[in-house]
Image (cartoon, rainbow, N blue to C red; front, side, top):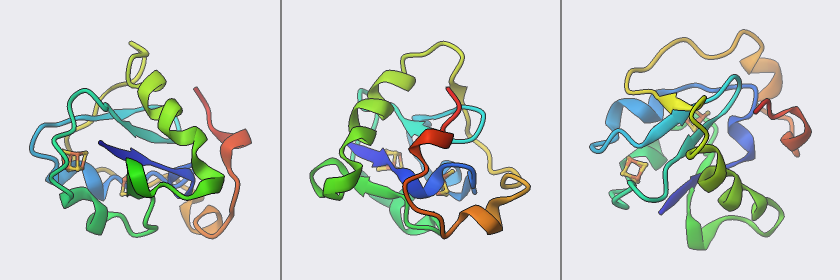
Length: 108
Ligand code: SF4
Ligand code: F3S
């Protein structure tokens, strides 16, 4: 499966959702996740993300391993609903796009 990681937090550009053939992105307040039970490993979303937030599970950087479980957990949260069309990024995306270790800012 593919995994959305730290760079997405407080940015949420949503370019990724337009290309997913199985509509497996789920949306929260300031982050998206991929449902690991639905992703078919097509790789299409990876190149779409302007901040390179999406990795194959096996390639998730060592300091971002927590996001594997976070994608699995939040995709099962009924409040995190499917998103299938691109929309505007979050208002402060520019300021947050270069910030690291944004996990404390992830709203669930
Ligand atoms: Fe969707 Fe393909 Fe990305 Fe998986 S790898 S989330 S199937 S676009
Ligand atoms: Fe997030 Fe990148 Fe998609 S910032 S919403 S993973 S395009």
